Length: 399
Ligand code: PMP
Ligand code: GLU
Image (tube, rainbow, N blue to C red):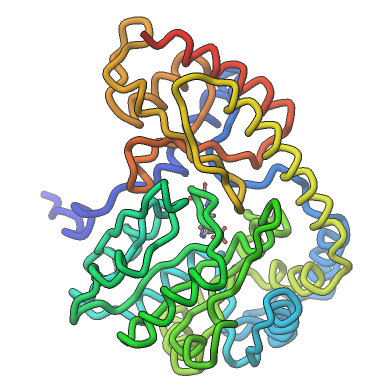
């Protein structure tokens, strides 16, 4: 006889971004001509300078355990990077390196939440936020943001969601999946309410470098010392340096929080790979021109996709200001059918498209909004052209 697994599992769903991506990889290995707008996984190779640094790390025997919070030289490089890029002044003992930004968010929630504490999550939100908060014993309070506000959380929407149990807000700026980027005033309005109410801001800034067309990224902790004190800044190297598999992320916060996160991390993974850490020092310190080159390519893709979507009937979206996703409203097609298959919601829309056209997109339901589907443009221009051609054909056949 086997006893049942944890009760927690009843509340947690698997990551939709990862499951669709895996399904697409399976189809490809079976020989199907698949195209993936699925996971936000940069398609660029890692820059040679970073690769060489990793090899050097292996040859120099960086094979021992490192500090739980990460190598000091890496934490120093992160401090320099945060100051240079986002005007943030942190000390190395206010940084904890982790196995990806996902891991930093997870550990921060474990460190902040007591059972039943409320976690405010503006929707649409990144798939893992709600599940991570639940795993950490939190009660999620989802606040729907509106398309007409470009999915920016409004101060009055936040105020309505606050109770005496509100503990943390998970803010993703620039946003995955909507591409929303907060102006300084919009961010300040939200952050000042949190400061007044004593709510921690878990500020996920992993897309800080990906901002388009005159929009400007402002880092939450740069707003004031008081706001910095309640903010946990989360970032990582997966997106900016196209190294998601190397698993390097980090959090920056006051020493009390970093110490608490370090206690928790020390009992589960200790730290991320020493070789990845060693190479990350070079990634952060080397000439950043190659990052700009990647950004230029993302800009081209964004403009191209926008022109394709604009020529299609029955869909709408709000212009993404940052990150590398289009969040497209396809709800006009719900209640209609593709060759006898009823399209009821974002899941059946995406499943039918994948089944007949071998193109992966992610259902909006995973992000807390069932009217939409998400396209990542971290894929080649050739795939974008072919994939959107198939999308247009799919739409034309839904009756
Ligand atoms: N936050 C957001 C909003 C993301 O889209 C991702 C995507 N991977 C992550 C965090 C986690 O990134 P990683 O763990 O690879 O650093
Ligand atoms: N964050 C990326 C995405 O949203 C990668 C997949 C994941 O970690 O969920 O697609």
